[in-house]
Image (cartoon, rainbow, N blue to C red; front, side, top):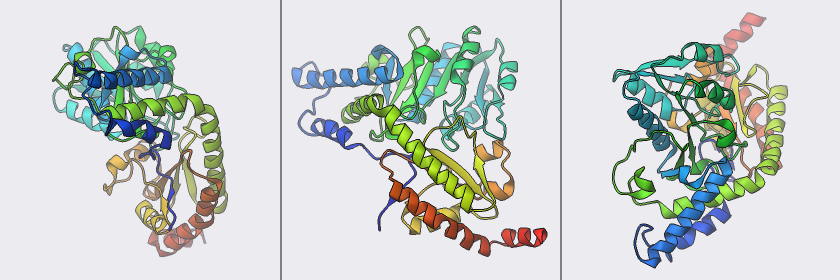
Length: 391
C-alpha cells in the first residue's frame, strides 16, 4: 500500500541532499570535532560551516547559534537561562496554545514559585495582545510565545511583540520550530532575544536543533559539561546531524518561496474540497495568517481518533494535533483555548503537507475522506441525535 504522508508538522522526511551530506561523517570523517589533531579539526570546520548556513537562514551571526539535541532542549535552555539571569524576577508569561515543550515547563515552574500569566487566544487562534501587554510588569523575567502554532498553523505577530518588550527590558523567547523553513524568519529584523528551531521539521534528521541567543543577552547554560559551544552547551556534538541541519538550512534559503507557494496551492485545494464536499466542518485557525502547509479541521459528531484510524487503513498519515500529546483522550488544549465547540473539538484532525506531496496524493484524500466521515457519522449517536433535532 502506498503511504501518503501528511503529518509533516510532526516530522519530515530527510532530504536526499541532506542525507548525502551527512553520510561521510558517520564513517569516513568520524573524528571528534574538539580534538587537537587535523582529523578531528576538519570535522570542526564542517560544523562551523553548518553554523554559518543556519545563521544565514534566520539572519543571525554564527556565534549566536548554539546546537542542542532537540527543540524541547532549546526551549528549556532559553527559559532557564533567562530565569537564572534574572533571579529576583518571579513572573513569566506564555500563551494557552503553546507546544508541550513550553506548556509543561511553565506548569512545572508554577509549582516552584513562579507566577505564570497564560495569554488567551480568540476563536481564530490569535493572541489577545491587550491582555499580554496589560500583564507586563517590572517583575516579568521572560515572555515565551511560539512563532507559529503546530496544530492550526496560526502565525503570531512576533515582530510587534518584540518591539513592545524591548523597551521594558524583558527577555523574549520564541519557539519557531514550526516557522523556520516554512516562512521567512529574520531575527535581526524581528528583534527577539532567543529563538528555537529543530532539524526534523525542515528535512534534516531528528536529534539536532538550535538555539539562537542574541549578542548581549545574559545567558547561563542548561547542560553543564565540556567546553563545547563556547561553554554554553556541554556534550560532544552530533556531527552528522549538525551537518545535515546546515544543508537543510541552505536548501530552505534557496527554495523557500517556490516550495511554499506550491505547498500552499496543494493545501488550499485540499481545504476547499473538504469544506465544499463534507457538511458540518469547521476550519480551525486564522484563514490568512497561517503556515502555508497546515490545515486543521473539525468534523462535528465524530471522533478524531476514529478518523485517523480509517485514514491509516487507506495509507493516509495525518494526526489529531501535536505528536507530543498523542495518547491523551482529552481534546486538544489548543482547540479548547480557541473555544471550538465540544462536538467538534473531539473530531479534529491536522493535515500538514511537505514539498514531497503531490497533486495525485491530494486527489486521493479528497476522493476518500468524505466516505470516511459519512461512515463514522452513521455510527455516531451524536450525529443521529443532531439529525433528529433538525427534522
